Length: 203
Image (cartoon, rainbow, N blue to C red; front, top):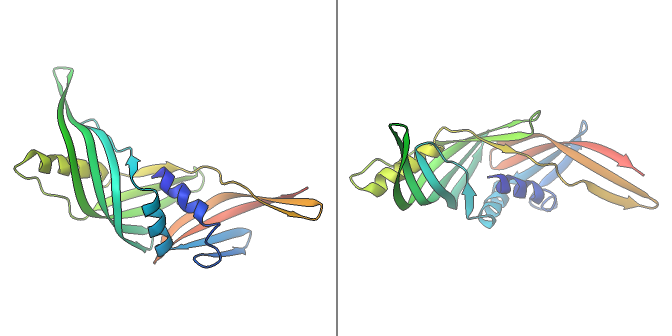
């Protein structure tokens, strides 16, 4: 997730001519990325490993495909295709940790993710809500798939944002540097909007 968000922010400075919009008002730079650009950016960074382990299930979890992307107010809806490798159920028996290796599994499901940004902590929070949780079946793979989805469902994932590279412009003998800090990240119908607080210096 972290690489995904940083990739989107980097794109804002390259799509401002045709795909995005940039405007400065009240000392805030507003950037808008359309849904189509975000969908293309998402595909560019896949597969994406995620940290979604729990005390009861361990292993490597990877997002191998994101499709049917739709953006609405403070929400991102999509279909996720997850793959789990080296999976193991973990139980505690009389103070001893027991691991039951279950191998690999893939699962596909629809989800809506709630998005909120904490400007003070410079942290983006994404909370997936799974709509069609796979039902437990009579075989082991169905049970594993359900456990894998349960790791994501209703869990809020914090993503610490890194500082953006400054925008530097040279004119005559002076160099103007614009450092920015993220003030807000917000999902809206068919787009994601970023608000940046600029600090301008010249020398």
